[in-house]
Length: 258
Length: 79
Image (cartoon, rainbow over the protein chains, first blue to last red):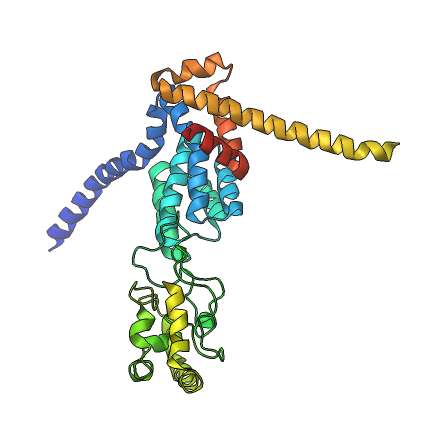
């Protein structure tokens, strides 16, 4: 038994430098990648920087964040071609996951920590995946699944009339979607649309999801459950609306969405 | 008298500033187009415009940081 332990320790000690050597080139590779570029490549890469900055803006990142990110990169003497790659990565991540509030500060902190190249790009991706505020504005494409608004996450928004928070593609009207008394959720957005009997009984469930599939923001995380908690009230509101209004009136907001 | 000149001076200042940034973007667009036409001669092209790689990078940073300039550059390069 002792012999096994000794062998294992010896093997471990022997292998440690090998592992260290194997890991080193991987982390250095990203730093070295920039140096391997010829001046021509560097110049061409730099040319892309304003274009990538625009891409990031169009993806939905705030101007302050773009500027802060650029400033952080410049202050840290990140070459323009590398900065262009970073912004490209950030733009992709922003399109996929939405913008993050602290992009500039985040880049600054990662640069301070010594991250460069692919490592920094990976960190940016992870940050957006973890803290991105829903789907971004995108470049007029909107969310591919056609689901709810990008930022309709919190319970505070459940049941409230949707104030300009429609999907980025502009398909859904931002206003006038809630029931007339303003108590219920905007149609297609509230949890009662998913609710079993109440909404369905009113004949809303099917239309709320809409033929274009822009209905409820399904699968948006635990916050949405908070909205479900409001369903009974909303049902009441819907019930009221059903009493007060004719069926044609209900149909109008649906028609608007198309 | 001085009051009368203040708006004129302000207008001139703004105009000169705008022209300067516009001139930079125009220059950058011209260079970018040349580089795109002859990518292997990028360094030589910069030299012809009396710019070093570092100066070019600084210019790109400056343009990228200004949405108006970046938009102008984007439009100019894509023409």
